[in-house]
Length: 218
Image (tube, rainbow, N blue to C red):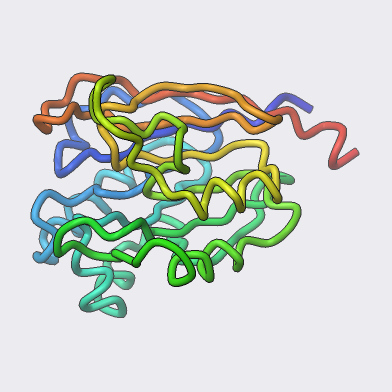
């Protein structure tokens, strides 16, 4: 069986229509697809764009800019009909177990902000053992989590601990635009899939990861 081809994007901030999206089996958006976050029109537009993408599955989590998903979750989720929306929940696709969460350490007055330490740890404790693909809006501490090379690490310490324990094969995130890129550590491949820079300019392409699942589903 061929590997599962996962197309990773994050932080489009309303600019999704300008992207050139590669083909793949699963399209994942790791949050901040809205620009202002408080109008249904933004979700409708994003959902329409998703419906035109050829990928077999589309998986989406919210981010801190996607305010409607925290303030009016029922109405927001109903409008996102062309994707599998994950919010501290999971799904299994093509032999892989996915888990998604929008929470990130507190930063200004945005959505899904949770205090560092015990408060946010309880969300990461919900991630099941055996998760293959972990989709979080923010990065784990120390991993592709600097807005500039000279600035401090901004990721979540408790998320880093959870990943060390669970060892997912892939962790996709965004949030820290300047950390865009990929790295691998302790058996986990990390992808900061941000497509905009710190000035919200669309400057990056989607990233593609292939995962071999033949041995797991044989």
